[in-house]
Length: 77
Image (spheres, one colour):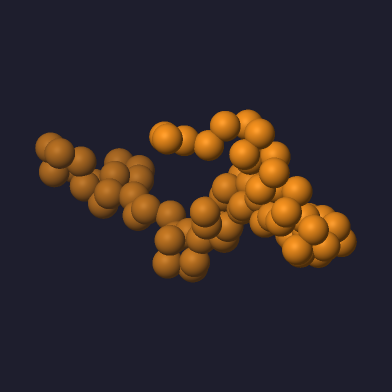
């Protein structure tokens, strides 16, 4: 009384194919396969495409004008 056996599932599948027709059933399975492929392809791609840094992000960090001891940097003495 619990679950269906293999024979029950085969009979159910045969009736479903007869009602829906072989071509329609085949098209439905093809659509499911395409959906799975698209899902896998989407999961394989990166979440965010790589982009170039903006002008603000690409600027160099300014050199310090003075050292920790208070001496000027970059000038000849």
